[in-house]
Length: 151
Image (cartoon, rainbow, N blue to C red; front, side, top):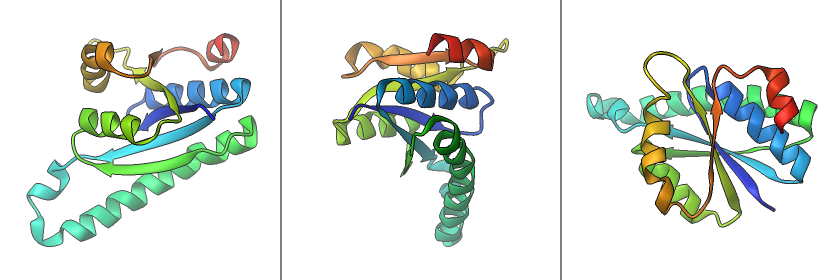
């Protein structure tokens, strides 16, 4: 089964990337894999409590994931899977794509403010020529209705 890999983070545009991935998976018989990456800097200053910080980060990720997963299951009939990795976002995305041969498309949400599309979209765009899969960039300010029409 082809999977749509989507990155879960705290950005506003993440919502549209999740919607797009779920809608495309539902319409094409695919799956959704949600990747959340814990950045290494969360642990650097507090080495003595790194395990506690890691556990708290994982709890936040799982709670956030459950919101999206419930919507995907209830509305789209898609049961997403969660993968949590630690490290640099670009390196971990590339590692996950390499680790799972069923991943067929990377879906990213682009910011729509004056700061540009966001650091992850910018970095992945630079790497897109060497990726083994296509990247779909979903505008963060695209309406839910427009997303439904194009998927």
